[in-house]
Amino acid sequence: MAPSWGGSYFLFLCMLLGFSTIAYGGNFSTDFDLLFGDDRVKISDGGQSMSLAMDKYSGSGVATKDQFLFGRFDMKIKLVGGNSAGTVTAFYLSSTGDHHDEVDLEFLGNLTGDPYMLSTNVFANGVGGREVQYYLWFDPTADYHTYSIDWSPTRIILWVDDTPIRVINNKEIIGVPFPTKQPMRLYTTLWNGDAWATRWGQVKIDLSQAPFIARFKNYNGTACVPKKGIADCKGFGASMKRGLDNENKKKLKQVNSKWVVYHYCRDLRRYAHGLPFECRRDNMAHSDNNQ
Ligand SMILES: *[C@@H]1O[C@H](CO)[C@@H](O)[C@H](O)[C@H]1NC(C)=O
Ligand SMILES: *[C@@H]1O[C@H](CO)[C@@H](O)[C@H](O)[C@H]1NC(C)=O
Ligand SMILES: *[C@@H]1O[C@H](CO)[C@@H](O)[C@H](O)[C@H]1NC(C)=O
Image (cartoon, rainbow, N blue to C red; front, side, top):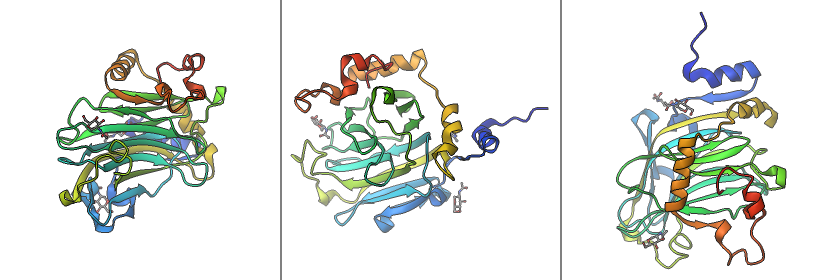
């Protein structure tokens, strides 16, 4: 009888192809290292939950012990409530070094009652500047919601719950850098961004409200950990080339027509001397949606 691999599918693939993958529900105690903030990072429920705090001295953050090349990362997050203006809660992948790669979800806090902004960005080979920013269709401080980064060699898909909000297709073929060569760690951090996060510093953080607390749970990473080199993860990457089905393409379109606040491809003031290559109309046609 054929064994039922179920959730161990990736582990199976790993053994088969000789590269190293992780397949787990996720444990904050064992999978992450403290990055900064000392005991402002609190892990509970046997590694299933974590909170990050920021006070007047410091924010806090953690990073995975492992570096990954391609994978899917899900995290339930409940953002800082009340007057959170100036706080930035970040959930992102990043490599290190000069020409780094990065995939960002950054939640910019706001005054009580004003909407959070979700700012997304991608860096490849040190080049960023590809921000798309959204308001959310719910209050992200009232409850946990799942935020996901799905990173394959052909595209990156960012999800909020069951809704894809952004697809960044690999357009290396027309010369646009895309993260495929540098392993990245997963980070979650909470920090003071009031120099830029609040309409470029117009609203200052109110530290009398501190400590600010963001909560995380149900971390699930299914990703390739290259042991010897990036070639190790090729098979894994190839196995996850999934795109969006029609229903999800529709959801993506709806989010983009309703909830986008800022799109770098539409920022003619910033790019007065010409939009980035991938934004030009001919090149947009290469993607199955607006980046
Ligand atoms: C973790 O993510 C993988 C890949 O997306 C999925 O197959 C698995 O069901 C998830 N596990 C849990 C506990 O959610
Ligand atoms: C997470 O790791 C910690 C430390 O090794 C361990 O005590 C705990 O039982 C683990 N949690 C689960 C759910 O396996
Ligand atoms: C905060 O709320 C104001 C008023 O609704 C809005 O203009 C702004 O985009 C929101 N987000 C940030 C990060 O300031």
